[in-house]
Amino acid sequence: MNFLKLSKNFLFIVNPSKTTRYFSKMKIFPIEALSDNYMYLLVDEKSKECCAIDPVEPKKIIEQVEKLGLKLTKVLTTHHHWDHADGNPELLSKLPHPIPVYGGDDRIPALSKKIGDNDTISLSESLNIKCIFTPCHTTGHICYFVTNLNDPGQSPVVFTGDTLFLSGCGRFFEGNAEQMYQNLVAKLGKLPPETKVYCGHEYSVSNLKYALHVEADNKLAEKKLEWALKQREANLPTIPSTIEEELAFNPFMRVTNEKIQSKYKVNDPISCMAALRKEKDTWKPK
Image (cartoon, rainbow, N blue to C red):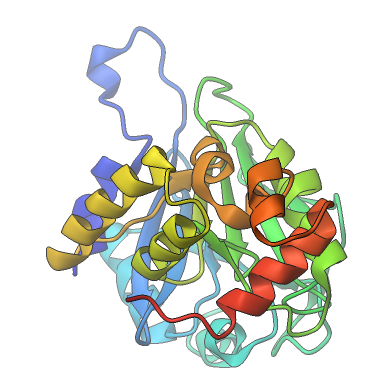
């Protein structure tokens, strides 16, 4: 799959000749990695500066940076798991000069800039990257929320690693249901509804089937599954979703829903989160 050819379908590319005022745009280039991972290049269009998110396959990252004529200036790592972080040392070794590696966990290979909740990172003069601490899948997980300071009309984006997937969430390897509730509902769920969600894995079809197992009458989940099946049959990605969509069909972001709580015989969102995750850990789609 060639995501670069698809990037114009994702977001944010304009024709300057058709606008009365030119803004530097951010572009996101998803790149396949391993069996179902996504790596990303976050690019400031004007300066050509970019950062790599979870570059587990450095060769692919460098090839696209060179092909697009970009300047790689940073690495953002969502969490320490090997399929997101273990490419960092090799990537650095192939660059002509050192660049910082950001992350929230000392276990991240080649980490040089440890960050925490609400810290900010700049990419050129245009893009502001806010760090959102989301511990649970791992204790040091960070999501990266990006806004374009020079073009407030451009939709923000968030890179969610293994905290939030399209219609799903990561396993609670190093945390608990209360933490994931805070991550998904109190933090990510409060981002602007138009925020584009770029997650760490292509799990959408299975996750949407589970969403319909939880809420069989959720028409938005049903429609999204039909679309996702067509995308995957055509070997196309299902990312990005939006926060608005996730709040509408992602069961892990709908734990305050009384019908879902009743189905799982609980009466609070944290118990509902725990019940959903316990079931999903062993659930198999039909």
